[in-house]
Image (cartoon, rainbow, N blue to C red; front, side, top):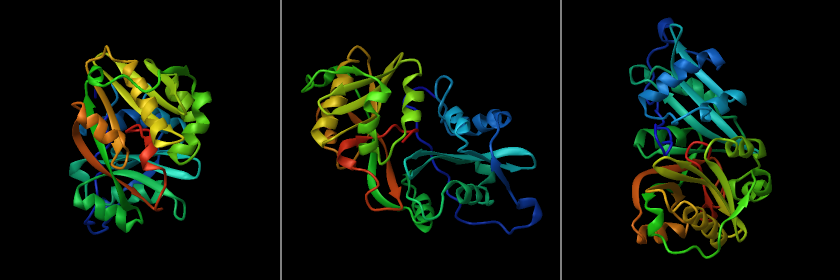
Length: 289
C-alpha cells in the first residue's frame, strides 16, 4: 500500500469455536517460505509497504514474526518489535473467514510475554479494546493519523540538520520507551529515508513519490520534538502530502490541525503500564512503533 504504511486493523477474537480437532490452529515462528502467505493476508487488509524490504522482512529477520495455519495454509500472522524491555505488538491479522477460530488468541499468547511491559496501537473497535483489556493492555491514549500539505506550515523554529541513526539512537531511546539502535539503522538504510536533527529533537522522514512519511520522531522536550518534526516537514516542502501519527497530548496536534492537516483515522494506544512512553514528545512510525 502506498504511504502511509497503514497500521494494522487488529482482528479481535471475541468468541471461540469449540476446540474440535479441525478447528485447532497451528501457531509457529515464520520462515522465509511463509512470506508469500503472510503478504497475501496483509494484502487483504491493505497493510503492505510500497516496496521491499518492509516491516515484515524486519520482523522475520529478528525472529518476531509468527504465523497461524489451518490445513497447511497461512490464515493469520502477528509480529512484534522491541524497544529495550518494551514489546510493541506491531501486527495482528486473521483472515475474516478464520476469525473467532482461536488463531488470533493463539498468536497473542506467543507474541506478548507475560509480566513484561507491552504496548500496541489498537483499533478503536470495541471488540479490539475488550480483547486487549482482557490481556492487560489498557487503553491509555488516542493516536491520530494526520495528512496535510507540508508547504502550508509556517517556517520551523530551527532548521533541519542531517543526522545518522546512530547519532539519534539515545534520543530515540528516551522518547520511544526503550532502545532499538539496530531497527533505526535498518530503517535509515531504506531508500528515501533520512534522519533530521533540530534543537534537541530528531525525526525520520521517508520520501515517496507523492508524500513524505514522518516518524519515528521525538525530543528531550515537547518543543524539541515539535521543532524536529516541523524541520523535517520543511525539508520536504516540495512533496504534495505529508502523513504522520500523533498522540493526543502532543502540542503538535493543534498546530497541524490549525494549518489544514486533517485526521484520517484514530486508534487507541493500549499498554500494560501507565506511561510506557512520553506521549507529548514522541511520534511513532505506524508500523515500527
